[in-house]
Image 1 (cartoon, rainbow, N blue to C red):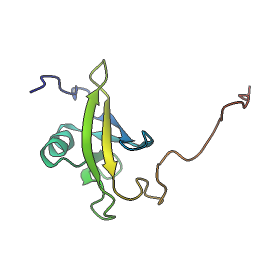
Image 2: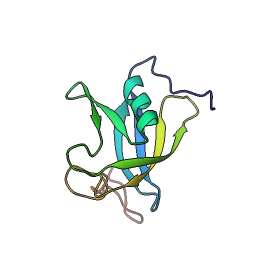
Image 3: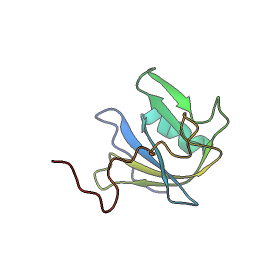
Length: 112
């Protein structure tokens, strides 16, 4: 068993969700210790909603669940990278990924 654990001492920990098949970044959400433990116990992603101040199970209402395939912790122990098998779209807008608003593309110039 791995002895590494996320550092929840400062509160919520960002969780970057990546799709196993495509390596697409699907979403960013936050976890507290309870949502992290529920994710480990159930094998599906659970997060903490900052706006509603409560736990939420990804796909509970939409059916678009995320089955955890791998969890990686960054070098500071304060950010999770979670690889999942995504069922349906990940974004609440119906998009495959929450990251669909391109601000700068390869070959474009940055504005000063």
